[in-house]
Length: 264
Ligand SMILES: [Zn+2]
Picture 1 (cartoon, helix red, strand yellow):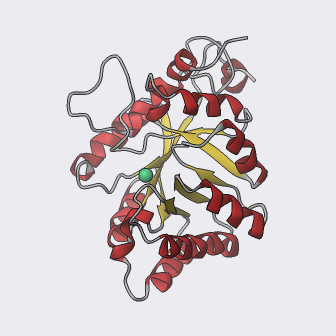
Picture 2 (tube, helix red, strand yellow; picture 1 turned 90 degrees about the vertical axis):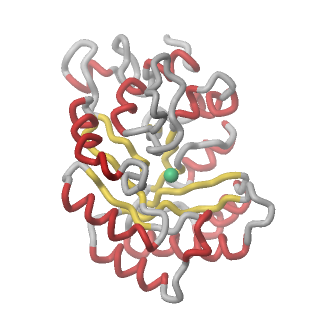
């Protein structure tokens, strides 16, 4: 499929969705109207903003109410489990049930060897069950915890409502496993780094209709020739990642094609 066939214009612009960012973040929230304006001017139609703990659920919800282009997700990030309240399951469940939203950011991160892995597994299992019960998409963070994720997926079977793995860092082989369980694969600015060979290999393994792009704003600033001096990422930055210099498959973004994909 070419960008031309999707847009009807030669070299046309595809509507773009930033599938994972954190617009509630204190480093950027004060500039939110500018961020939304710049994103929309750059052709970003929607921004999926993920809460990371109960404390930022309300701010995420307020952003989504104020700006129709912002789509909220609610979850507890594996880095912030110490923030859990006694009734977090109720808080999360009520929030998700009462809003048009997805679930996340949630997942497993075993990078820190001191992390409480059992607690991470229990919290993530609850999010997965909620996603199934309420038929919501789930926005998943996985670092150095692929085996437990695959075990969980094997046990529960493919997701009824598709989910996604954000800022994918796994192998090309894992891509196929993720797809089998109805997960989409999302790539962040990390794929543009010169040393990102494994991620680039994984990118090449993803089915053409399963690739998503994200900024993870305000983090993961991509390798671009003209970086913003403040170094904070924002959804408009997705646009240069996405625009194809000539008609080509949808995933062949300028930056991605530079680093990864042989054109036919
Ligand atoms: Zn994130």
